[in-house]
Length: 137
Image 1 (cartoon, rainbow, N blue to C red):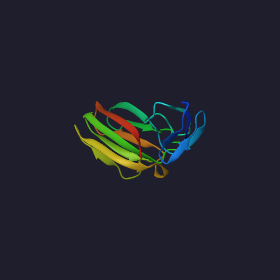
Image 2 (image 1 turned 45 degrees about the horizontal axis):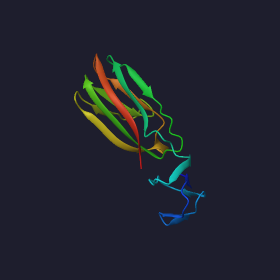
Image 3 (image 1 turned 90 degrees about the horizontal axis):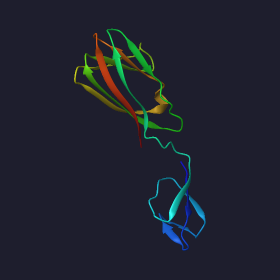
Image 4 (image 1 turned 90 degrees about the vertical axis):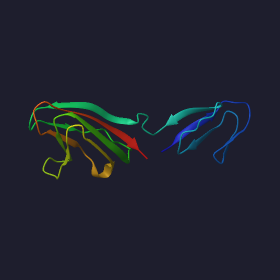
């Protein structure tokens, strides 16, 4: 993923094996932190959290989360149950679920080529779950 930086100083900057003359630009695959370089273009997603939320459901109630994952290769799915219990399904509620008990958590890094949606299904009344879907390298 390309990040384009412009040298805003009056001199030559050497960084990460490249030289950038005053006023010129150069492209990198990662973020740089230099006082005389200004990020002018970035094709990467800038929000590290793809989705976050709370699910409150009674027995057999479901909620489907379908995050936007364009140009993202891996995400970490994080879920914590604060009341009741849940099953977590990937893509289809007929697939094998992961069960998350009361005060339990679920963390898994998933290649997005295998992920379309996440389905949370309550196993008890008044079940509550908090989730995050976070970009991973």
